[in-house]
Image (tube, rainbow, N blue to C red; front, side):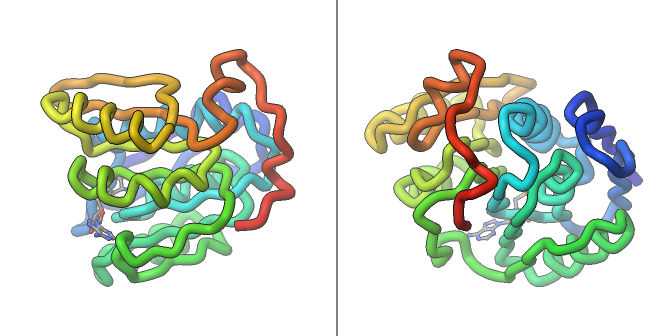
Length: 204
Ligand SMILES: C[S@@+](CC[C@H](N)C(=O)[O-])C[C@H]1O[C@@H](n2cnc3c(N)ncnc32)[C@H](O)[C@@H]1O
């Protein structure tokens, strides 16, 4: 069992300050470096957004990033995984943590039809798949990508450049990296330390 502390962002929101994720068959107890880096970036981004911001979590596994987003003040949350067992576990984890109104979907992210605009997309997958679906991820104001090996960083950077997506920050731990990127307007504003949009009003 993992207890994931929500950290600083939590203090702005009501509710418990941690998540309980029982060790299970779905990936994502918070111990893996790719999950830990994604959580950090998600917390950082959530501090820039108004409560009620929207998130799509691609490859949700145990649901840990979707659940954390709710703790960080997200409103509409969609969590997608192509593994039915993972989705079942993620739903159970939501119940354990008394977190409601996450739209869990069993689907392949390649088939996911991206909305026109969304505040945050998290995608802890693997490089080849991330590169393949990158054109769809431009809908996100903030993009958190992980599951990328250091040896694949150049290929992912190249793909981001050709999709005109700016990199805001790269975190590195062990052999893994996680990238915070901005799909449209966010990169410049997060670099300046402010957000000009009204994310809570955007449609998912
Ligand atoms: C590395 S785990 C990440 C789990 C969790 N989001 C985290 O950050 O710890 C990747 C997840 O993506 C799912 N996945 C892999 N390929 C997928 C695809 N094509 N479509 C949807 N989900 C996929 C896997 O089933 C797995 O649960």
